[in-house]
Length: 362
Image (cartoon, rainbow, N blue to C red; front, side, top):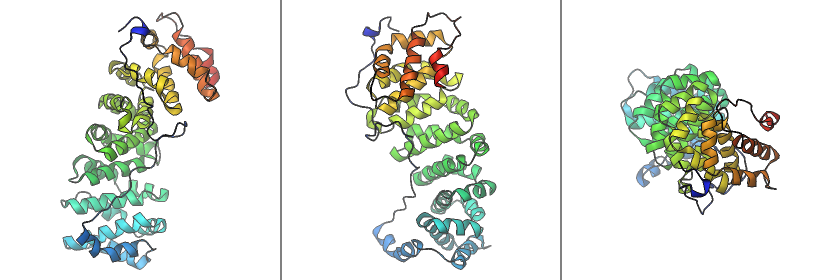
């Protein structure tokens, strides 16, 4: 550790950290990735009629007929594929169809498809449930049908990347139901799998994993410890330090959720998070400056050693500039001032008093 901020080895970025060019402090998480159903030209020609019909409202009789095919005692693989695909498309294109499909009893047979050995059928089942979960009324129905563990199983071992990514999205939707659903998803083992997807997935997979982790860690405190223990901090910091990833904002918000626990704070410091956060305060967008300041504030509270590390990393000058910025929100200025005051305190572990500005801002 360098003893002088001016000699810090922290690399200064010459470009903004922006994910999307938006420098506001609004929520960084857009909706999860959509149902991207694609076909070869020959296959596309064959299902053109289905796509057109699925864009419109389906009759209750038509939906009931498809559900009956899924529940048939001895269906052919082709009939199962066709019924599951049509339900998937009906739920994708029409909000009213989502209500009708759930009301027709489709959820349980769709859940059963998640354990089917056919990869395409499994993908249709996962994605149909994702599309149904877009309707808030259906989330509880899906949870009550026992979908959480099969979806976690699909996230772990589905043959197609699309099925794994859509399982992550479906779990995100269900986590938004309430804290008990988020906790149940964590207990089912989703968090380590999402961390793995965050590390090794493609662009969409990483974004879906970050969004799902944010929902799970925000919805149930116990999931924060699961994420830390699964090693989430390292890939989050890597994404935060890489503007080209397009994931800076998302990763920063997930990290902020994790540093709300003592284990998360320790992991962030151990993995080199302080330089990343200080640089973000210095060169990030308005939203990034804010979330980095809040994360540093959590890291520094009640820990004199961490305060010393943050101060030596050169945090005070950019925080002063932030507190004096005419474009910064008043609440952010107050938080920046509180952190400055904290960093300027005598660095004794016995000091437990919190700056008055922190209390006033809460």
